[in-house]
Amino acid sequence: MSTDLRPLSPDRLPASNTPPIAPSPGIPRSFKEAFPYGWRYVEVTRPDGTIDVEQIPLTLEDALHPQEDDQIPSNSLQNEVVRSITNALDIVLRDRDDVLVLNDVLVDWGKAGIAAMSPDVSVFFGDRLRGVLSTYHVPEQGVTTEVVIEVTSPSTRSNDVEKKVVLYALCGVPRYVIIDARYDARGETLQSLELKDYRAGARGFELAAPDESGVVWLESLGLGLVVEGTTLRCLDGEGHPIDTATADLWAAREQAERLAREEAVAKEAAERRASAAEHRAAAAEQVARDEVLARRQAEERIQQLEQALRQARGEA
View 1 (cartoon, rainbow, N blue to C red):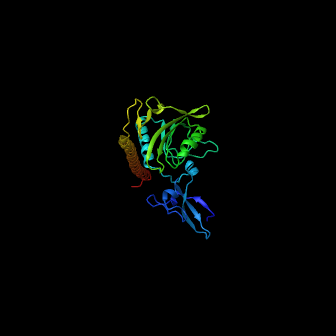
View 2: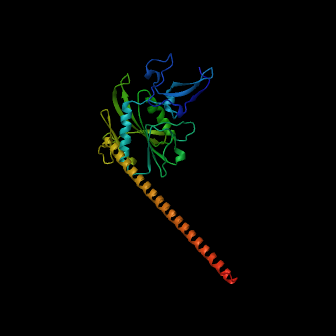
View 3: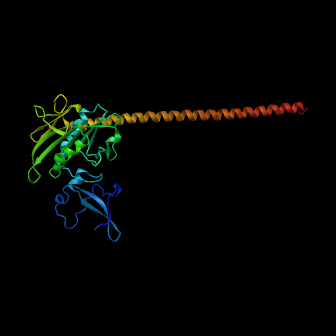
C-alpha cells in the first residue's frame, strides 16, 4: 500500500478539534477496537506519487515506547488520579525549587537498548532544572530520578505491571509506584484500586508493603498515597488529607503572583530604559548646545582676529 511511511511533522498534524480520520476499510467499525492503544498520523506516498495522511493504529509496544506525536487515549479514572497526584505535589512542593514534576512527558534515561517511555508522573531532583520542550533526556539534565508513578488502564495494564517493572529498574529508577486499577471483563466498570510500591533492591525492584494504615509514603516528597474503596487519597507529611481540588486555586494564585512579579520587573526595566534614554537625550542636547556655543565663540574669535589684523594694516 505504501512505499514511504514517515511520522507526520507537528505542522502537518490535523487541528486538535478535527475528528480522527476514519479507519481504512477492513478495520473494525468500533473506534475503540480499531485503535485500542492509540494512533499516529503518518504521511503515505501513494503509487502515483501523491502524498496522503493516514491514521495508523499503535501496537502495545508502541504504547510502551511512544513517539512524540503519538495519540494515546486515557480514561477518566487515569485523568482524575494523575490530576490529584500532580495537584498534591504542587501543594507539598510549592516552596521547593529543586524538584521537577513531569506529567505524561517522554523521558529518556539514556540506557542503551531502552527507548524513551512516557510515565503518567515522574519526579526528578536537581540543582539546575530546566523546562522540557519534547523528550526529557535525564543524563543531559544532570538530575536524579526520585519516583515514577503509573496508573493502569485495561488496554495497557501489562505494560505497567510487567514490562515497566523490569525496564524502570534497568534505567536506574529507585522507586516505582503503580496505582493498579482493575475493571470488569468489559473494561468499563472499576472493580478495585491497589497500590504497588516497588523499590530498588540488589536484584532489581522489590515489592514493599504499605504501612499499617495502608499508606505508601513518598518521604522525600512529603506525600502519602492511600486507597479508600476505589478512591485514591493524597496525604501531606503529617498524614492529613490534601484537598487537591484547591490546587488549581494555589496554581492560579502562584501564577498571578509570578505574573505580577514579572510585570514589576518588566516595568522597572522599562523605567530604567526610559530614564537612560532621557539621560542620553539630555546629554545629546547638552552636547548640541555646547557645539553651538563653541561655534559662536569660534566665530566671534575669528571676527576679533580679523578686526585686529585690519587695524594692524591701518585699515579702518
